Amino acid sequence: MKKPEDQNNLFLAVILSMAVLFLWHFFIAAPHQREQERVAQQQKEVAAQQQQTTVPAGTAPAAPGATPGPAATPAGGTAVAESRDAAIAKAPRVPIDTPSVHGSISLKGGLIDDITLKRYHETIDKKSPNVVLFSPLEAPMAYFAEYGWQGASPADVPNGDTLWTASSSAPLTPSAPVTLTWDNGRGLVFTRTISVDDNYLFTVADAVENKTGAAVSLTPYARLYRIGTPHIEGYVIQHEGLIGVPGEKLTEITYATALKEGGESFTDRKSGWLGITDKYWAASLVPPQDTAYNANMKGRPPSAGGRDLYWVDYTLPTLTTAPGQTSKVESRLYAGAKEVKVIERYEEQFKIANFNLMVDWGMFGFLTKPLYHLLDWLYAFLGNFGLAILAVTVLVKLAFFPLASKSYEKLAKMKKLQPQMEALRERHKDDKARQQQELMALYKTEKINPLAGCLPILLQIPVFFALYKVLFISIDMRHAPFYGWIHDLSAKDPTSLFNLFGLLPFAVPDILHVGAWPLIMGITMWLQMQLNPPQPDPVQQMIFSWMPVLFTFLLAAFPAGLVIYWAWNNILSLAQQYYISKKQGAEIHLLQNIKRNLIAVGNAVRLKKPTKT
Image (tube, rainbow, N blue to C red; front, side):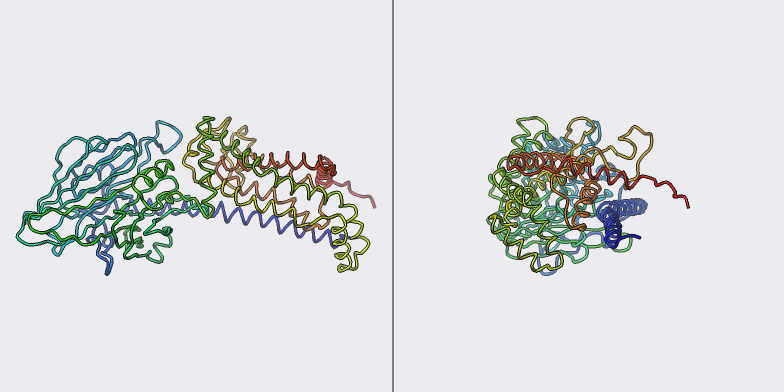
């Protein structure tokens, strides 16, 4: 007959097994399945749209209520093309060619709507296509920036159908700005000069010359559109969607929230920026930092047959231009990779308030940013991002060595008292209150605070979380190779235990995709736990036994760089705890625990011979 405690242990084992499967399904399988379904649905919608001659009503946003904003449609002639290339060919263009980007400006509407990033590819294959950031309105996944003016009569100002004239057919380069001109034929001449630097910053200078006999009042605006919900990583640890600092406070709105709640509006703000961010790429509008403006960060679900729509915009104060005079306004557009040094340089050079928050530093930004710069320095010094991860983990461990030592010293002293504590528990097993009193008296006699060992560990948690965050958001880890089978630290370990890491010729289902590095991480976590004596409470012991398994499955789908960091951190912690325990003269239970676990496993799998009656 089974003992009650054996039944309880079996029940706990079943519950924990179900928990592992549930968490795996919730965090890995279900999001992956939803993403596949979303992509399939989006492909169906795009295919349906490509068969239509025009974008369905409701695709373009209406002007925002009481706040002045752009015209109801971002551009005229909204026929959906068969491909991005076909959409680009629909309008005359001025090429863009810089060390970092190439693309073009549409003379129809004067839109910056074609940007491809030269230094980044879709896959680790250098022959794969470059990453596309901006696409025209008529493309299946439109994403572009629009600048313009609002006036009393739409016919008096340029709009999406306006055909601008370029001053030259030469491409826009860092040394050669492009000037676009449009005369409305009623006394107003509009000029737009666009310049770009070596990286990702465009400067847009709009001017209007008044040749009429009366003063003209016009309101300048800028808007960034994204039509269609892009593929997102979907991790809680990093924001993707609408982002900005309209004033001084960071505002983040996910795509789902923007569609559901409509977004936010802001009035009378000064300084800051507004944009849309992916994990590694972003675009943002930067208004004049010394001028008040109204702004929107909005989203709108599709009408029948339409597409999701997202946009950020700002409107500056109305400018009144006297006869014979010219009014000017200058603003900037960032469109490119989220390279920290480039973004920080722009923030300092142009005094853009909190521009560095375009990178998702998280709640521990005061730790995350210094750790990033340390990692970046090590990367430049060592030449391999994986080695930089190992090195920065060692440095952080060394910085916290005194605190960790105190923690492990307390644990070592607690281990020495383990026999006395067990004797007390056994002596007063029927009197829990007396048992607790005797334990507290023992702690007092030996001058041990059982909670003192936890405080140093708690102090380290924000730092290690911040380092984890840095690795997750860093664009430097994207497509960065390590050694052996890891060719991209930002992708999950491509191997799997269940086909013997590729030796067996069959693909492994996602649920069984546990690579070599996640397995190493789980083993090192398990070994670290074996340094401690078995827990007297079977529930606690069961949790400790299953925790490495749980983390192995959970981290199997995480980027390899994060798993390597976690495994290496476990190895360092294991060595540190072993050293301090040895130094304190505490009993080290590692080999005993390994032997005990092996015996337990052997007993569990051994087939009993049938007994003779």
